Image 1: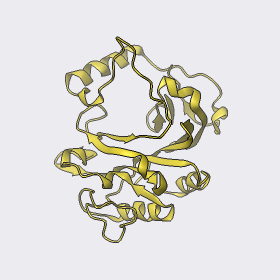
Image 2 (image 1 turned 90 degrees about the vertical axis):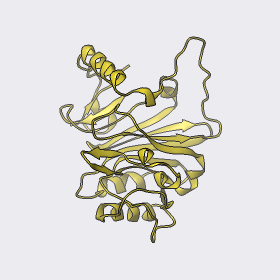
Image 3 (image 1 turned 30 degrees about the horizontal axis):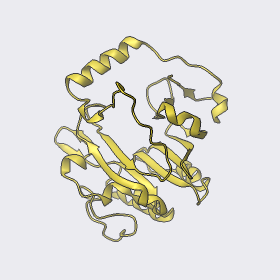
Length: 241
């Protein structure tokens, strides 16, 4: 895991499965709220950007990151965008699949304009799901969709599914959003006998509590290496083997 933030209280992170580490080409941290990783997936080069967008808007940093990625490379942006794109496309048919959730607001319009400008698609809106698989944020009686996956339109063919896993494995409010892609020639490692597969959808209730306690017992993560290696010397990076 690689994490960028301040004093371990906020930020974004990217986890890479061990058998994918040798395929990582580059790691970039633009700010506390934006980081990206470039890796080889089969015959494709894929860029994954993890973002957290404050309510003030998307900002120029995300524009700069997207503009720096060549058009012939795959691009996926995922995170908390703090905006509601609404349940219907209504003027954004080229980027909105018409299967969103709720009512559109000004933040959602900013997201939609951003996707149009960079020829992206909001993947969540292209799969017909029950409400429990659409809502990414719950607070009291409020149920909204503010977390999204954006992909370049020419890469959307890789998508097999995109949905929320209705569990409590992250926080009491945010829910885990999953994107399932199938890239030709990518790694498909068979599990060895006795090797277990993690089923994240089962990580709720008592199971989530046990995992939380185990992580706390492990203590603080070790900080190693020179953070300037990743582009900025005033960031905190945590790597967990």
